Length: 351
Image (cartoon, rainbow, N blue to C red; front, side):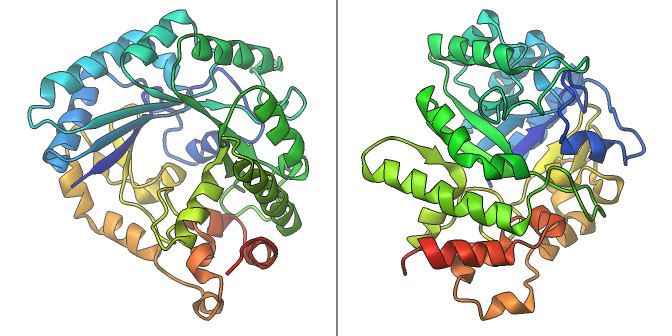
């Protein structure tokens, strides 16, 4: 069966210190925050186990962090070479990288282009809106990211933009959207900022009104551009259109339950979700246990099963076919946005 594997080759190591970074706070709650840089043996075991699981069907590898490019270009060259050597059954392999883009140079761009790697660039908008994304010494990263984007365009690398949807960004969504559009950046993903586990209030996470404002104003801008024939993609809204057509969403969590996937840390430690790389959800180490065996573990089964739980108020809701109980399990734990979804669907979606 097809398999999606997220790989953290640099573990939680990063050259930035973004103020809202969820992975830094999550990693600090583990027995080991930093699990080392991935070596060739672990990389080979990830690839072998994924191809065994897929058995000639599709394999998707997504590299994330921390900052994955800290592992160096030679690590990725080795990884691609191992994919080619081990893929004896002809699986379709897709490689993606999510990066803060500050380390991208012409060599990286040549590598991305020649290997057909889809790049996700983290950027929240213009200089002001991106000010949470800073280096460890407090310097802003905006100019370096914009320079990298120009290089990606120069080399015709396929890439998209990933933005963290904070309270500030939700309140200034129009500004963010217009900045991206004016810079010829048409493939966008806005990811809700998460509260830490057990956190009641957050400086960065959205209120219900913040989220409702983003959903309503964002969809209007998106829909108007599509109606005019302008190519704009906001992944969440693209998926709502799929759900309206009676088709499944492609984005993890938007169908109302967790997708089956694996997240592998630098030392091979494996978890069922990027948001749950914590001790309680540890599935084993890929150097010792295969993905097939991990899938049969009680921890994996109970993790996926728990995502199917539906709040009683959702069962009779006329918007359930689109909202799916609030989508991603981790987002539901972070905040109850039920009223935001209702305000959005009542005003925007035509039934």
